[in-house]
Image (tube, rainbow, N blue to C red; front, top):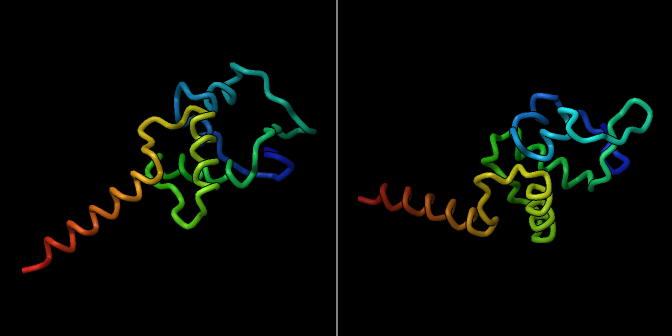
Length: 111
């Protein structure tokens, strides 16, 4: 596929893994897709879309932590746009929760 002018290879199983999402409906033919040559064309930001695909590949459990707040906000919007946000917590809440788990693990190790 071509996302915002960049070629991206994504397996069909990944694209169809969130049933009922716009992504699922798009790639099951429920919506007409734009094409350039023989490739599906999505007029989306390729960097953000790729982060979203990786989020889907991780069973919607892992979001990148090494990106700035603008990218995090855009990724949240992309995830919601495609309807793959089931179970998505706010990024900052997710980060805080992970920190709480680590602190609790460390405290459990203290005699």
